[in-house]
Structure formats: structure tokens, C-alpha cells
Image 1 (tube, rainbow, N blue to C red):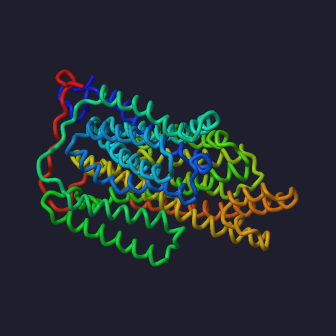
Image 2: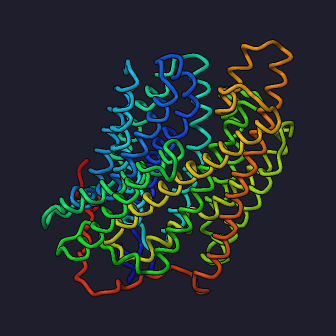
Length: 528
């Protein structure tokens, strides 16, 4: 039993564990959507139909709006209350999914994916900030560990569900499946989460909203479109400059306005900024790896979408397992050693992936992927906890939003950089192995396989052998970059975090009156 002097703020809300189930359900729904669509892209190309540029924008529209609106959504969540923000985001996400399933043109689907990204932007940061609000310091690490483990479930459920759906239904099924999933999550949120009143005092920071959304949108679009446009093209450089100017203006405005949307001073807290950087490195490596690994399984090994989805099981199970127990690991080793060890494990696994060949058995590949997953599971919870624990409790929405932003920016940068390296290395490798290779085959591995299907058997076999080998070698270059970056992250974690660990809230650099947290309503007096 707790001591008589223990307050509800120390212990947490009485309904906290039931609420955690609702939060994890909401997280799984959004995570599934992020992975299930990848399996549907070939079906979309033929069934909608959609060009390669259309497919890129179907993916990118969601990412662009999601990343651009995260800070704004976190700020609005404070005013609305986290429960309302979460329920509203799920509703918008479900409505966008249902409409996307009925889309008849690529343009419609691109617009509706943007709507889905808007809904998801309210869901992701609200789940983490609500955990901070509901759980006391003693149980919060375990809650964040379980929250992190659910991401592993989404990663494995998404590709498998996508493969199963596409074996029996059309591409629209990957959007229809979101509707019942969101309905279950929404019901759990409304039933299990206690009412959490918003803070409506003060004016809405419209200037901050527009500057942050515009700056993040320009930054993400520069990263996403860089490989296609050229990193040093006039358009890319102009958009990158616009992103820097808008985000700098946002920071200056937030420092000067009396009612800022985001307290920029939090970035002066070393443990907060360091944890964010390490999360960005982690997601850079993850998204960069998955971008090439999916193509490797489906094209080089010839796996179906379902079998390729099952190929992610060792990674996801290892990640979920180490994430679920990361609270105990952190308690034993400390934040610094746990995060550094996780990044070192990721680097080891990525180095293993960098050694696979075209004929490497999947059993060998699965070991390397499991090591990557185990490492990531060790990082997610303690790094997320370090961001929220570095700030006072009333700053939880800020921590949740920035946590989501750095993950997303790391992920899109990983895809862009690794994708650029792999594409360039593939073209060079194919030209060396097969001088004068037909132009479509030199564009990407998918085009090479499509072209091979139209050639005589001997020519097709020669092209596929050269193309598969060129892609596998190019994948090595991309995964070695990820391995080097995560190893550098491990060293940074060891040197950057104090030996005592990151945990206690740090006073903000320049004193400002903190906004008191709104009291939660007790279960007895609450209504759903």
C-alpha cells in the first residue's frame, strides 16, 4: 500500500492503467497505417491507376501535413484538453481513411492522405503527453516502456495485414481497415480516459502557428523532394532557405511573445535536446533501413507482400520485447548506458545487414534484423522519458509534440539520404556490371524487373542478375551509413548524458511563470 503522505500527483490518476490501454490502442492504429500503405503501392499503381510521381505524393502528403502540424496540434491540445484532442484527431483520421477508400483519382487520394496526416498529428503527441499527465514519476517509465512496445506491434501488424488484405481485396481495403480500428480506439478513449480540461486562458498564438507549420512544411518538403529535384537545385536551395527563415522567425517570435505556443527555452536543457537528437538518429536509421529492406525482400528475394510483411516479424518482436522491459533495464543501467547500448546494438545489426548478399538465407537476415529491433527497443522508452522528464509536468504537451517532430524529421531524412545514396550506387553498379543497360532498368530495381518480364529468357536472366547484385551492393552503402550514424549516436549518448542519468525536471533557463496543470476530474465525478 502507498504511504498516507503520497499524493495523487506522485502516484498518478486512479484510472491510469486503463487509460494507457486506450492510448496504446490509438498509437497502434496510427502506426499500422504508416506501414500498411507501403504494401499497397504496387496495387495502387495499377488499380487507381497512379504514376510513380503520384505514389510518391500519396506517401508524402501524409508525411508533410503530419510533420508540419505536430507543434500546432500539441498547442491546440493544451487548449482543448488532451482527451478531446485525441478523440478529434482519431475522428478526422477515420473520416479521411473512409473517404480515401472511395477515391477515384490520384489527386483525390493525395488530398485525403493530407487529411489523414492532420488527424494523426493530433493523436501522436497527445498519447505521450497524456501518459505524463496521468502517471506519477515512479510508474511513468514503465508506462512509457509499454507505450513504446506498442509501436513494435504496429510495425509487424501493418505489413502482414496489408499482405492479407491485398490477397483478397483491392487497394481500398488498406484504408477501409482503419475505420473499425479507429472506432475501437475512439471507444476506448471515450470510455477509459478521464476528462482532462483544457487551458483556454490567453490568446491563440496564430503567428506562431503559421510560422511553425510553414517552416516545418518547407523543411520536410525539401528533404522529401531533394533526391528527385537534386539537393543543390535552385528550387531545393530556395525552399531550404525559406524553411530556415520561417523557423528562425518562429523561434524569435516565441521568445518575444508573452503567450508563446512553444517555450523555445526548453532546447537549452541539455538532456532534452540530446534525447531529441538521439531519437532523430534512431528513426533516421530505422526508416532508411526499412526503405531498402522491403525492396530487397520483394524484388531480390521475390517475396510476396504478405511474405515480406512477415519478414518484419523478428525485428518487431525483438523491439517490442526490449521496449517492454526497458524500464527495468534503465533502472539497472541508467539512461546513459541503456540508450548507448541500444544504439550500439542497432549499429551491430545494421552492420550485419550490410553483409548480406543476393542469396543470403532469410534465417541469417532475420538475426541481423532482430538485433536492430532489440537495439531500437532499448532506445525508444528511455529517450522519450528523457525528453518529458527534463521538463516540468505542465510542459508535457510541448515534450510530446517535439518528440514526435524529431522522430518524423529523422525518418524522412533517413529515407531521403539513404534513398539518394542507394539510387546513385545502384545506377553506377548496374552500369559497371552491364554496360549499356536499357534506360528504364537503370532508373530503379522495380523498373529493371518490369523490363526483364518483356525480354527473352536469357537476356532477362542476365539483366536480373546484374540488377539484383547492383541493388544489394547499393543497399550495403545505405545501411553502412546508418550503422556509422548509430555508432556515433552511441558515443554521443555516453559522453552527453551525465553519469547520474537524465531524469529530474530541469529549471528553464530564464525564469517565467509556469502555467499550473489543470486538475484531473476524479472518476467518481466524471462523465463520459
